[in-house]
Image 1 (cartoon, helix red, strand yellow):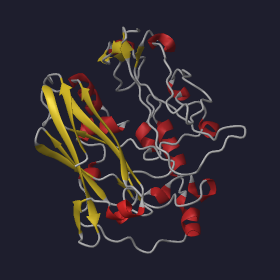
Image 2 (cartoon, rainbow, N blue to C red):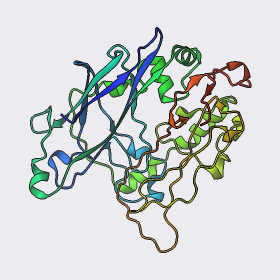
Image 3 (cartoon, rainbow, N blue to C red):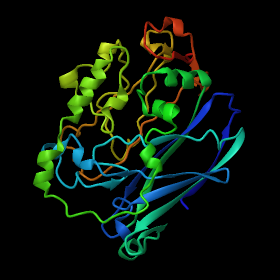
Length: 341
């Protein structure tokens, strides 16, 4: 058992959909049982209102394909991990929970089982080795419930393809269907290739292929064409979204993250885009660089998250459908609006 939460939902109208977004990364390994949480195969069992809704695996076995390759990062970047790869964005998995959700209070429970090589089965996890040797196995969990109105669902389903992970879940029930099918048996990893062999073959041009795919659609920026790395080269591709007519709004720049500034906040007024507080799509470009001057930094894994809070009159605001007639020809788009505070 990891945790239990209670959350409230309004009544879902016919055609509305509720999606659960789950992102989990595992950390700790050097002296823990089964190399958890970084190198163990974990399955997250989700129960909603007393019913088992899903069993989810976030295991990443594609770290060797990271476009950073060995020329930009040393160490164990290529090793498969529980829920993440070094330098990667982890949006997690989106899946439809409409059939289990209800109006009012909802109860959610998250449990975890871990593959035990000795018994060849998934079992509840206890970190005996870490307890004895002073190391800990931990999970960083992000979870949100997102409700989409019928018009948004139908708009996503009318498109020829999904442009975001959430849109794919609205179309197919899950953004990564394979994540809901954990392996029934986990085989021990074969002998790994040498670091030099992996580094030489890791960069297979996926970043450039994704960039080309994103540019082929002149109306919408295709985020999922860049999955699972979501990298973007300003030097090679120019300002993000410029070809699609996007308006760029600076939020913060050269902001330092350290012990006294672990949380950064910035406010953007709804009218900053010059479009009256309405938009078809919004994206965030985040770039991390080493600090300047003589400041030191370490090279171990760090976890961060980014969130957006919409408010009107000082209170959390709902994003609602607006008039699509003034979308300016954005194919398949849904105009969103929120009143400025």
